[in-house]
Length: 202
Image 1 (spheres, rainbow, N blue to C red):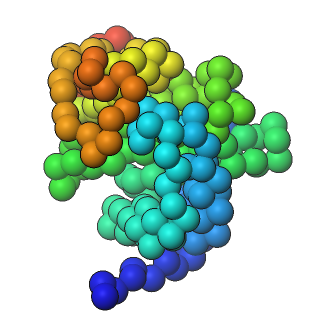
Image 2: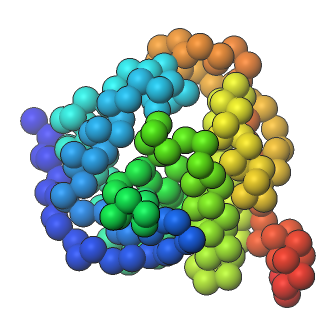
């Protein structure tokens, strides 16, 4: 039987603040938040076809993976819990800058938010702030994001955050997800491109 990674508590540290959100490091106490988030079929619609993530997977795999990444990069890259300032720091989902090259020069930008905060612009607000921090403070050279082609809400957030569509591709899914026949889309943004738009040195 494989050894289950130990989930240890980490001090609550604010990573980033926007006008309406606080992004903080995850801790062991966030297991329930993640279980509830992934239990919503609408949240999981374009990820699993609406099938919830089993609580034991959150406990034994998802949260330990998030905390390992946080520890590996000293909280500089990884996943952050998103809290709504106006609601007394209520958990509303998470954002990620996940390194894919080992050194953190290229990262995947991602987010997953509770259904009851959709339509408020939180995905765009958090993503824009992470893009700026990635390129001005964290040494990231290129960001990318991917979603199903039919996920128009997520695509709009990527575009508003400054990422640009580059291609459509197809991949195999363990189970059919409605809309999978239209493929996945990839959006990207480089530091030099972003800086040129801001009028900042690249």
